[in-house]
Length: 220
Image 1 (cartoon, helix red, strand yellow):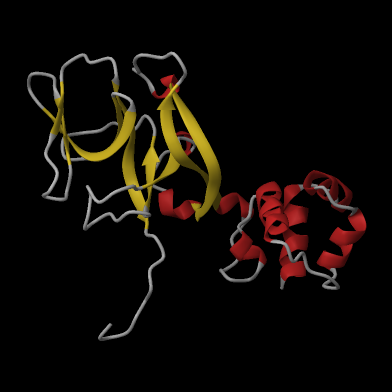
Image 2: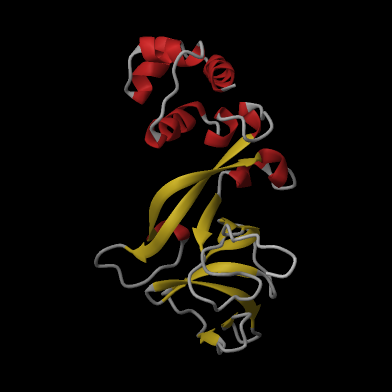
């Protein structure tokens, strides 16, 4: 299964086995053995590098998910933190903040088929911290956001205010201020003043990837 899918992915990439081997830092003979089913890359970091170079998921390579055409897989950057650049006092645009990228998600492109193609490139994933948005969103869940997507009152969004990022519901007031509202009742509203330079809407929430949790049984 692995060899067959690896061979298919290499061919779809347009690379030769020699070119592919060079990109992942191995020798062509190793790739040949993988493709022919004589050997398997045991180290997870090698599988992850193969996944990155060929633009397919590790699960696809291992036969754990249905085959997906490479062009139907969407790579979404995973952001661990958003912060101000050194010496910076305020932020007005998403380009004004530092994005700490730590990985990527591979999701079926069909899940975002209603989103214009140019906006798919603006997608990113951010891990939820704390319980301010519980019970709908739990700590460790990852939310897919779209940079530049128009946000209306009642939408959920990732915002940058002061010196940190917040995931909150957005309420626009008539006086120009913006209320950041949590879902958990234990959190008070945060209210920004009109024209505050340190406030910026980073992205609108589109989807959630729940953190893996123990399944349990009927009574546990």
